[in-house]
Image 1 (cartoon, rainbow, N blue to C red):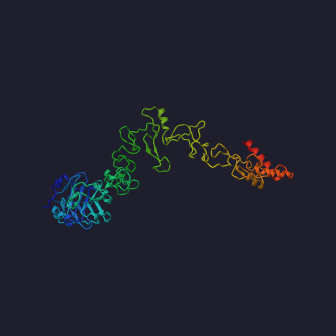
Image 2: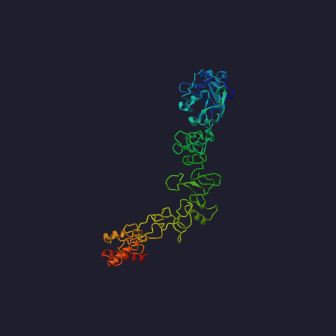
Image 3: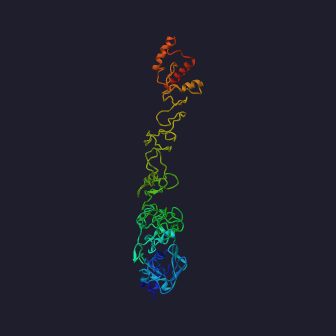
Length: 513
């Protein structure tokens, strides 16, 4: 009789057959070893992940070109949490020293075989798929043909995770001679990256991350069928059950995808009444946060769309009730507190933070500048007009609107002649083209602070308050007097008119100032 491991024989009455996906997982494979013939040395290992004693009689294992069926007798069972090794031979002298629990050649005379480079193992019972591992050349198994290829410990009990090549590696534990593996025992962790959180989701593989290449898959995830909760037919929360986040397990009308934080408790779901029981009844992330003022918010800080872009993301901050009533508060206090919550409208300039965003409303026009501190306002900003978003420090000055657009304290007059200077900027001649002839406006545009002073024109070209006040004019003036002219020569009618106009304009502006 084939030397089957006696530990796996038990009373059939105590065992039940596998009945669901994941109750048995394939955890280790050695195909086509190079130190012994594969008809002696091929083997693979399974694990009982069901939580109870399993009846293995009738179990079917398939590869791409062969099938192994465990016969109905003798009875073969597998304890919960234990491993079982199927091999071509149980003779350790022939198979490389591997302890085999069931030899397919010796017990059933099956000619079962596996291909190292590319094969597909499935475990079935009564037509039910229990597990499968489908590898090909991209997995790189040909590189270590004397090593059993094993699933990482975090994936051994997870039939979805052991479908991923990243969760398999070549064993480094020596069985005997050059054969390596952990047949019949818990798999070793292999690779330095096992202790590294490669995808940055807060979990490394040894912490239970069953796919450490995708941040949306980790033990804290919600297992749904669309982003951000995974994809159809995956195991986003690494609990060994596919897409279980879309099932309302407790029948309260809410699934985990919908926000149910305890889908085994009928009284726990979003919007449930919070009670002082040490639990998070309403699934807002906080225990026993009772809404005493009944405004729909509590002191629990929750994620919300504070920037108003329609998404809750890294640009948002947390929201909470910044003024919650206490247990037993009077109705007056309850009413006062109810006016403070993230949904309230913040009254501007009153020194209170009704909408709980951390500050009083001081930027009513939303131009990015807080209002100045004036009578009745509790703000300390620099916006001189908080009802007009176009008025604030640094705003472009509109010289036509009569406003202090840039809040510099000066309401600017127009730059009528277009020379870049207004009356406030020191332009002593700024003729309006709609009121004066073109020739006069041309001359006006040449008169402004910093302009070159011209001689003999009786015009204060640089607006410094002196007409023709240049040393260069002094000699010219003496020459003009010798010819009988007046100071710096005679003044023609046009220039005299401009001079009078400039004087009147300057006088008018001085009065308006």
